[in-house]
Image 1 (cartoon, helix red, strand yellow):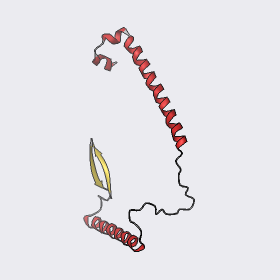
Image 2 (spheres, rainbow, N blue to C red):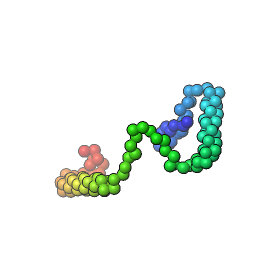
Image 3 (cartoon, rainbow, N blue to C red):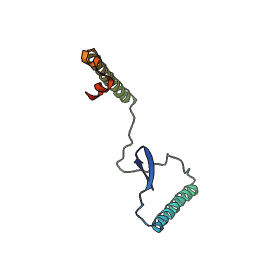
Image 4 (cartoon, rainbow, N blue to C red):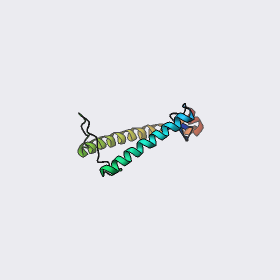
Length: 114
C-alpha cells in the first residue's frame, strides 16, 4: 500500500511498509497479487462483474443513508444567507475603514503593518 506525504507543495508517495525488508515487501506484494487473482477468478466463476458496485455485503444493523433533496436545499439556502451576511458585514467594515482619513494617507505597506 502507498500513502501520500506532502513536502512543501510537492506530493511524495511513500510506502506504509517502508520499515520492512525488501524480502518482506516482495512477499506482501505477492500475497496481495494472489488475493486479487483469487477474487477475480471467484467473480468470473460466479458470473459476476468484477466492476459491479451493486454487490453489497449485508451487515447486521446497517441502515443505508438516504439523501433528502428538500433538506439539502434548505441547508444550502441557509448557508447562502449566512455567506451573504458575512460578505455584507465585511464590505461595511471596508467602507468604514476606507472612509477614515489616516487610512487613506498610509501606504499599502503601512496599512498591512497595522
